[in-house]
Length: 312
Image 1 (tube, helix red, strand yellow):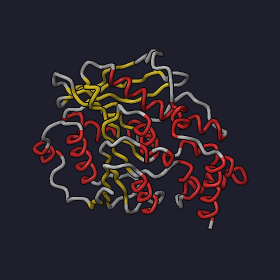
Image 2: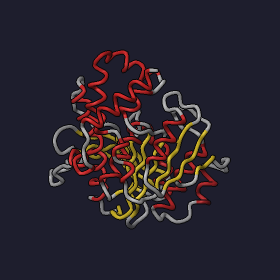
Image 3: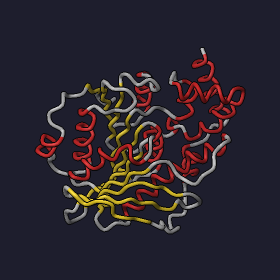
Image 4: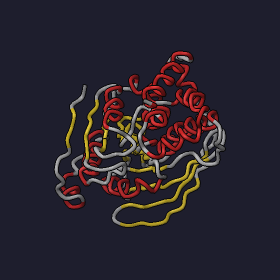
C-alpha cells in the first residue's frame, strides 16, 4: 500500500513542478575554468599498472576523493570513471582488472565536504555527485595518456543512478555500465522494500512527501530517456533485497537505445564472475580496446554466460 501511495505523491509532485530537459540539465552546469587542484600520490606499481590515491576540487565546494589506475603501456588510452555506492574502493578490484586490459580508471565516491540534513541539502549532495562525475571526466581529459574521445562511466547502485544522469547531460561519455540501478533516489526511498529505504521513510514521517518532491528533480527517470545513443549495459541482481526486479526492468525500459540488460544470481553486491567478465568485455568493445579474450581467460576463467535481455 505505501508503495502505491508514495508513488502517487511522486507523480503529483513531478506534475506540479514540471520542468523541461533544459531546465533540469542547467542544475549541473559549472565553471570548467575553476582549477581542478589535483592532488595525487602513487601508492603501488605492479602487474603492468600504477595505482595512485587522488583527489580533485569541485567547482563550488567540496572535493572528490578516490583512486587512479594507469597502465604503464605508452600511448593514449580509453578513460573510465567508476562510482560505487560504498565508496571509491568498492570497484577497485574491477578497475584494476580493466586497467590491466589497457584503460585509465578513475574511481570516486560521493562528493565530500558538503553538509546534509534537509531535503534541499540532500538534493544538492546528489547534484554535486553528478557534477563530480563530470569533473572526473575533466581530470581524465587533462591527462596526456587518455584519449578524450573514449571515456566511459561505470556506476553501482546510487552511482548507477548518478551515472545515468551524467551520461544524459554530458556527451563526453561514450559508453555506460549501470549495476543494480533504478529510476532515481526518490523512487528508491519511496518504494523500496529494503531496510535502508524503510528506515528513511520512518525517520522522515510526515516530511516524506516534501523530501521526495525536492529530490525528485535528480531522479534519472527525468533524463535517461533522452540520453545519447551510446552503448549501455544494465547489470541487475535477481536477489537484491533493495532493488526488486521490476525496478531494474523499469530502469532499463526507460533508457534510450542501444542497450542491453543482463541478470546475475547475486544480491546487491554483484560479485558474480560473469558480471565482471561481461563488464570488461563490454567496455573493451565499446572503447575499442581490442581483443581481451586471452587475458580474460587467464584472469577470470570461463564463467557461465549471464542471462541477457535484447535492446528495446
